[in-house]
Length: 134
Image (cartoon, rainbow, N blue to C red; front, top):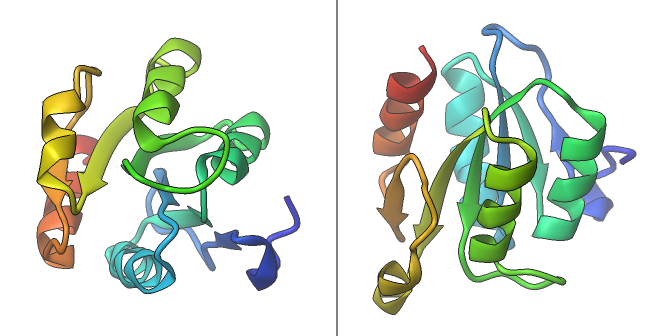
């Protein structure tokens, strides 16, 4: 897990709430933008570039309250498969999905706590996270 910038993971600096948010997004700028907004709102944020890295986080960090995941991303599984695994292995963890592909909405048969079309307004995402966790 390391937390090195090159391995696709970044850990939050300081938790000001008791909630940890895991962002799973392969687009670096999108991931950084939402991570910064959530950190500014007081959340501890862990970033992962794909589901494989995110599974490593979930295996080692028991305090993840919410996962924000892109649907289309590289790696051994897409965001829908990842969300399904979270629901079965970590049922108390909230899941918010995002996609830039409107066609992906029809495929979302997984129980989730919100869906955002990309590009989304980071403030609206933060407001949604606050509504779910606070």
